[in-house]
Length: 179
Image (cartoon, rainbow, N blue to C red):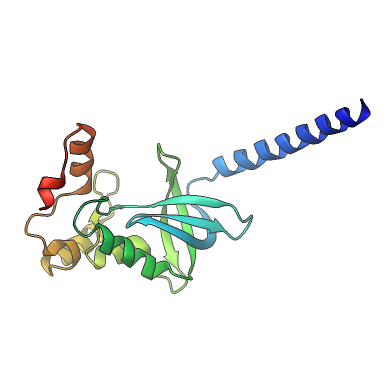
Protein backbone atom coordinates (compact mmCIF):
# COMPACT_ATOMS: atom_id res chain seq x y z
CA UNK A 1 0.00 0.00 0.00
CA UNK A 2 2.89 2.33 0.86
CA UNK A 3 4.42 1.85 -2.58
CA UNK A 4 1.15 2.88 -4.25
CA UNK A 5 1.00 6.03 -2.13
CA UNK A 6 4.54 6.91 -3.21
CA UNK A 7 3.64 6.51 -6.89
CA UNK A 8 0.56 8.68 -6.45
CA UNK A 9 2.63 11.42 -4.80
CA UNK A 10 5.30 11.17 -7.50
CA UNK A 11 2.64 11.29 -10.24
CA UNK A 12 1.01 14.35 -8.68
CA UNK A 13 4.39 16.05 -8.44
CA UNK A 14 5.13 15.35 -12.12
CA UNK A 15 1.68 16.59 -13.16
CA UNK A 16 2.17 19.73 -11.08
CA UNK A 17 5.54 20.41 -12.74
CA UNK A 18 4.07 19.89 -16.22
CA UNK A 19 1.18 22.26 -15.49
CA UNK A 20 3.64 24.85 -14.20
CA UNK A 21 5.83 24.43 -17.30
CA UNK A 22 2.94 24.83 -19.76
CA UNK A 23 1.55 27.84 -17.89
CA UNK A 24 4.97 29.49 -18.14
CA UNK A 25 5.04 28.78 -21.86
CA UNK A 26 1.57 30.33 -22.26
CA UNK A 27 2.68 33.44 -20.36
CA UNK A 28 5.20 34.53 -22.97
CA UNK A 29 4.26 38.15 -23.32
CA UNK A 30 4.38 40.97 -25.82
CA UNK A 31 7.92 42.09 -26.45
CA UNK A 32 9.49 39.16 -24.62
CA UNK A 33 12.88 38.29 -26.09
CA UNK A 34 13.94 34.65 -26.31
CA UNK A 35 16.91 32.99 -28.01
CA UNK A 36 17.14 29.63 -29.63
CA UNK A 37 18.18 27.55 -32.58
CA UNK A 38 15.92 27.03 -35.59
CA UNK A 39 15.35 23.28 -35.70
CA UNK A 40 12.72 23.12 -38.44
CA UNK A 41 11.47 25.44 -41.18
CA UNK A 42 7.86 24.66 -42.09
CA UNK A 43 7.46 27.22 -44.87
CA UNK A 44 8.60 30.73 -45.79
CA UNK A 45 7.13 32.37 -42.68
CA UNK A 46 7.00 29.67 -39.98
CA UNK A 47 9.71 27.80 -38.09
CA UNK A 48 10.30 25.85 -34.89
CA UNK A 49 12.71 27.33 -32.37
CA UNK A 50 14.50 25.27 -29.71
CA UNK A 51 14.81 27.66 -26.78
CA UNK A 52 18.26 28.02 -25.20
CA UNK A 53 16.80 28.66 -21.75
CA UNK A 54 14.87 25.43 -21.20
CA UNK A 55 15.37 23.30 -24.32
CA UNK A 56 11.68 23.43 -25.26
CA UNK A 57 10.49 24.03 -28.79
CA UNK A 58 8.03 26.75 -29.78
CA UNK A 59 6.53 27.51 -33.18
CA UNK A 60 7.21 30.98 -34.57
CA UNK A 61 5.04 32.72 -37.17
CA UNK A 62 7.06 35.60 -38.54
CA UNK A 63 5.58 39.03 -37.91
CA UNK A 64 4.34 41.13 -40.80
CA UNK A 65 4.69 38.76 -43.73
CA UNK A 66 2.82 36.01 -45.53
CA UNK A 67 4.79 33.60 -47.71
CA UNK A 68 3.48 31.31 -50.48
CA UNK A 69 1.39 28.34 -49.36
CA UNK A 70 2.11 24.72 -50.27
CA UNK A 71 1.32 24.15 -53.93
CA UNK A 72 1.82 27.80 -54.87
CA UNK A 73 4.62 29.03 -57.12
CA UNK A 74 7.71 29.99 -55.11
CA UNK A 75 6.57 27.98 -52.06
CA UNK A 76 9.65 25.75 -52.22
CA UNK A 77 12.02 28.65 -53.02
CA UNK A 78 10.67 30.73 -50.10
CA UNK A 79 10.97 27.77 -47.73
CA UNK A 80 14.48 26.96 -48.91
CA UNK A 81 15.56 30.59 -48.61
CA UNK A 82 14.38 30.76 -44.99
CA UNK A 83 16.24 27.49 -44.33
CA UNK A 84 19.38 28.98 -45.87
CA UNK A 85 19.10 32.12 -43.73
CA UNK A 86 18.57 30.19 -40.48
CA UNK A 87 20.73 27.09 -40.98
CA UNK A 88 22.94 26.59 -37.90
CA UNK A 89 21.93 30.04 -36.64
CA UNK A 90 20.93 31.23 -33.22
CA UNK A 91 17.88 33.43 -33.57
CA UNK A 92 16.48 35.96 -31.13
CA UNK A 93 12.72 36.47 -31.35
CA UNK A 94 10.67 39.34 -30.01
CA UNK A 95 7.24 37.91 -29.28
CA UNK A 96 4.39 40.26 -30.15
CA UNK A 97 1.37 37.96 -29.94
CA UNK A 98 0.07 34.41 -30.17
CA UNK A 99 -2.24 33.34 -32.98
CA UNK A 100 -5.26 31.03 -33.03
CA UNK A 101 -2.99 28.10 -33.95
CA UNK A 102 -0.75 28.54 -30.90
CA UNK A 103 2.14 30.03 -32.86
CA UNK A 104 4.10 32.93 -31.39
CA UNK A 105 3.98 35.94 -33.72
CA UNK A 106 7.47 37.38 -33.61
CA UNK A 107 10.05 39.52 -35.25
CA UNK A 108 13.09 37.26 -35.60
CA UNK A 109 16.70 38.43 -35.59
CA UNK A 110 19.84 36.69 -36.78
CA UNK A 111 23.06 37.15 -34.79
CA UNK A 112 24.27 39.71 -37.35
CA UNK A 113 21.17 41.86 -36.65
CA UNK A 114 19.21 41.08 -39.80
CA UNK A 115 15.47 40.65 -39.23
CA UNK A 116 14.01 37.63 -41.05
CA UNK A 117 10.69 39.15 -42.17
CA UNK A 118 12.59 41.97 -43.83
CA UNK A 119 15.01 39.53 -45.48
CA UNK A 120 12.12 37.47 -46.92
CA UNK A 121 10.46 40.61 -48.32
CA UNK A 122 13.74 41.98 -49.66
CA UNK A 123 14.35 38.72 -51.56
CA UNK A 124 10.81 38.76 -52.93
CA UNK A 125 9.66 35.58 -51.17
CA UNK A 126 6.78 37.03 -49.16
CA UNK A 127 4.03 39.61 -49.14
CA UNK A 128 3.75 42.30 -46.49
CA UNK A 129 0.73 41.14 -44.44
CA UNK A 130 -0.89 44.59 -44.32
CA UNK A 131 -4.11 43.29 -42.77
CA UNK A 132 -2.23 42.55 -39.54
CA UNK A 133 0.84 44.77 -39.76
CA UNK A 134 1.19 48.46 -40.62
CA UNK A 135 5.01 48.68 -40.64
CA UNK A 136 5.92 51.13 -43.42
CA UNK A 137 9.41 49.66 -43.83
CA UNK A 138 7.92 46.23 -44.58
CA UNK A 139 5.55 47.82 -47.12
CA UNK A 140 8.50 49.59 -48.74
CA UNK A 141 10.57 46.38 -48.93
CA UNK A 142 7.71 44.56 -50.66
CA UNK A 143 7.31 47.43 -53.12
CA UNK A 144 11.05 47.43 -53.91
CA UNK A 145 11.08 43.66 -54.54
CA UNK A 146 7.97 43.94 -56.72
CA UNK A 147 9.47 46.75 -58.81
CA UNK A 148 12.73 44.80 -59.21
CA UNK A 149 10.84 41.59 -60.16
CA UNK A 150 12.62 39.62 -57.43
CA UNK A 151 11.40 36.23 -56.28
CA UNK A 152 7.65 35.67 -56.60
CA UNK A 153 7.24 39.06 -58.26
CA UNK A 154 8.60 37.46 -61.44
CA UNK A 155 5.06 36.10 -61.92
CA UNK A 156 2.85 38.42 -63.95
CA UNK A 157 -0.04 38.01 -61.53
CA UNK A 158 1.02 36.37 -58.27
CA UNK A 159 -1.82 35.25 -56.03
CA UNK A 160 -1.58 36.32 -52.39
CA UNK A 161 -1.56 33.45 -49.86
CA UNK A 162 -4.59 34.84 -47.99
CA UNK A 163 -6.61 34.65 -51.24
CA UNK A 164 -5.49 31.06 -51.84
CA UNK A 165 -6.42 30.05 -48.26
CA UNK A 166 -9.85 31.63 -48.71
CA UNK A 167 -10.46 29.72 -51.96
CA UNK A 168 -9.27 26.44 -50.42
CA UNK A 169 -11.52 26.92 -47.35
CA UNK A 170 -14.45 26.99 -49.80
CA UNK A 171 -13.41 23.54 -50.98
CA UNK A 172 -12.24 24.78 -54.37
CA UNK A 173 -9.03 23.46 -55.88
CA UNK A 174 -6.41 26.08 -56.69
CA UNK A 175 -4.21 23.82 -58.80
CA UNK A 176 -5.54 25.25 -62.07
CA UNK A 177 -4.45 28.75 -61.00
CA UNK A 178 -0.79 27.80 -61.11
CA UNK A 179 -0.58 25.79 -64.32
